[in-house]
Image (tube, rainbow, N blue to C red; front, side, top):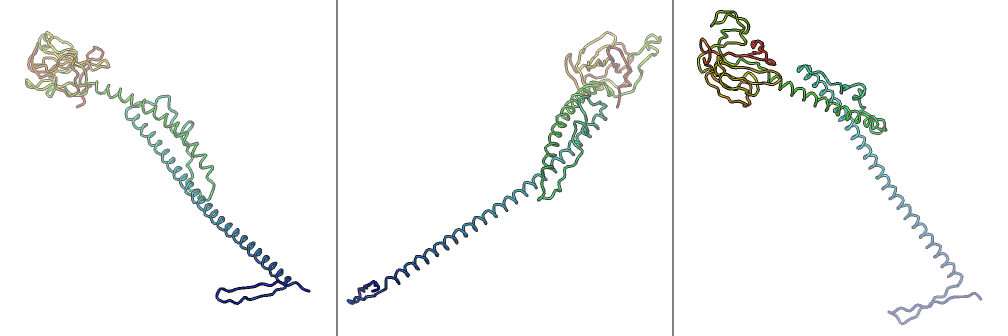
Length: 308
């Protein structure tokens, strides 16, 4: 006799009890089928979950790769910009070199032996950096060349710094030399007696006149013809009231027969600064300035030093 399984159901709304009878084999088959279906659903669901997870990870990975590609392009674009800036620095250094050469030419100052020039050995490379490399191409060669040229630029910049310091030092010395060189007329007026041999107005004999005599009315302002230091301001026998200024570099100027002395000994004066007024003190035949230029103590022709 086949085994059967009875199942009773009771509903709370009815007093009746229902009975179902199932064969044991059918129940077992149903349970097996249920378990198989449940297992299949779970397997398919798990596989679907893994597939969705992989799809999500793949999308995230693709987004990361895309971001990295964009970042790489931005970096390469920056590299190209830097290459352009390096090229600009090279051009600026070249301009500075040309400017330095122009200044040296104008000021007649030779270049020191410390410099090897802007271009050539030890200088900046003449090779232009390729800024037009496609963004999807490798930039390794460009980066290496940039590093190389940056080092060269630094080296040349250090040399140019030395050259400019040398130039400034020499220009300063030249400026001081020029400022110390008598170059203007000490007083307005007429030159009544030039530098050199002449007939003495007092003795009538041929004598050497060591300066220029410039005549004008009494009280006319007399200026220093160069920057310097007053080393004498007082009276000297036949010269009358005298101002002597030391300009350095072996140069000095003398202003004689002045009426009023407006400076004092050891006073620093500038070119064009009023130092006295024209007079006729000492041995003179009339109001005038006796002006001398001395180089290493020897009188020279003042006319050669008057540029105005």
